[in-house]
Amino acid sequence: MDKDHLIKQLNTLKHKRAGGLARQAWIADAKKIIMQKAEEDCQILQASETRGDKQLRLVFDMGRDWHRMFRPVVAMGLVVIMVFGGWITSVGASQNSLPGEALYKLKLFSEQAQAAITSSGESKVKLHVEFAGRRLDEVAKLIDSSVLEKEQKVGQAVDGFKKQIDSVHEDLDNIKDKKVTKKKDSDKFVEVTKIVDKKAVEYQDALDQTVDKVVVSKDKIKGAREAVNEVEAKAVEVLVEKHLSGELYISEEEVSETIQGKLDKAKQDIDQAKFQLDELGRPAGGEAIDGDKIVNEEDEGSSQKEGGAGTVTQIGEVEGKIQQGEALLQNKDYTGAMGKVKEVKTITMEVKEGIAQTKIVMEEENKADAEQGLSADGLSQGVVAPGSETSSTTLKIEDGLLSGQSATTTQEIIEE
Amino acid sequence: MRNKIKEKLLVYRVQVKRDAQAFAEIYDYYIEKIHRFIFFKVASEQEAEDLSSEVFLKAWNYLSSDKGVKSMGALLYTIARNSVIDHWRGKKIELDLEQAFLKDELLEPAAISELEQDADMTRVYKALAKLKDEYREVIVMRYLDQMDVGEISNILQKNKNNIRVLLHRSLTALRQTLEEQENK
Image (cartoon, rainbow over all chains, first blue to last red; front, top):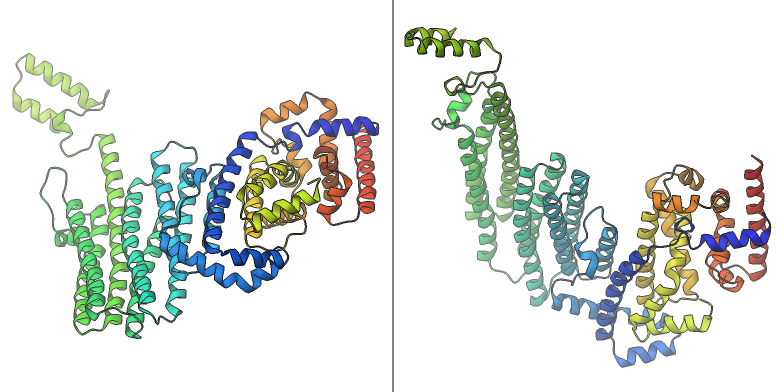
């Protein structure tokens, strides 16, 4: 091939997808997202700068030296605006994208960029809490959708959620180490720990609902729940620690109420678990069996026994620890009381998992029984396999009855 | 960007005037070039799109933090190169562009059939895929993106004579590869 012809071929290749020609739709979409971020950032930067800053930048060659001298001022400006503005605004089109979609990575990267330019510890906590909420929204949308590879995509969103919760944990550690001297800093600190506490409870409820929908690995959900439990406890621990060091403008009563709130929630959770366990102990159409009877059940095949015995013991353990926590709280041993709260949460999670597992096993057993026609009152409903001897016996019974055979004879045939 | 002064003006508008539209102009000029540059390194349209978007976001963060920028093109291509390296480091596999093309992994079916309608084009593409990265980069910049030697030298931070020599060697290597393919 001569040089001119080769160059002509190369020039033509640029108009082909094989030559790296980008899709116009993607170019437009990506531009929209990037420009939305650029415009938002420009507004923030413009609001934080003075005329003098700009003039100084002109003097110091496109702002390199200006940047070194005045960066703290700009950073403070950004912090004030972001904290005053509350939650960070969304980034446009990519906001609605889900795992597996073209703009999803851009969405995540934009979130990372937002977190990176946030210097305030409290604001970072709020950001990561919000991003965690977005991951759970994605999980909910994916579960309700009919996308391909749903399990993988939901798993990706759950992993993303856990990552954000881990970041919240890290952020709480960072702000814990920061000295708090002023009341407004104290108020900010207390507000953030309460936000984390409140959101952690909401996220835990959302994860409980996800488990019921069974579209992703149980280990992932378990990991996410453990992370939320830890961060919920961390928020209150950090509050207690700061209070004990005398840095916070917060009353003993408020600290005590916060921890009591945790113990009350733990009581609610364990009562709910007991109710669910009672429900499981009830056979179809029969009377409820209480926990003790389940423990004593001799039937080897009973899945209720396996779920019931350990679970009942654990419930007892939780109730005991709640009482210990309340006693410690009355003695103003806040650290001790929070320790009990953490232990209670761990055991309660195991109880919930045990009950969920038992439910699944029982549902599978019931399904299998129904398929084999071996349900408790199956025969009286005339559930008979076609072509079976029983079936032909039934016909004979009918014939016999029609021809005047006695009912006793009919019963004998059924019992054979 | 053909006009260095125009480029500097756009950077000034972003960093001093906080004019986001100036960045839009930079995006419009470079987006297809950056996409093509990355496309020939990652063997996937989807990944080229994702990485290209990341490059511009990173470039924006860099520009808006008021760091010095000698050349916008050089900045974008440097970020693009590093993004590709990070991408492959994350995947822990080596790129084989030719294999990806032969296995139809590079392109969607519509794009492949578009190419295969022209036998000459397919041969050129395959030969391009076989070239070493440095040669392929300059050929793409010069003959697909239609950049002049000055612009390429600015981006690759090499002097113009080096770029001319590199272009000559790259085209020679491409023609040799094509001859070898024809002789098989």
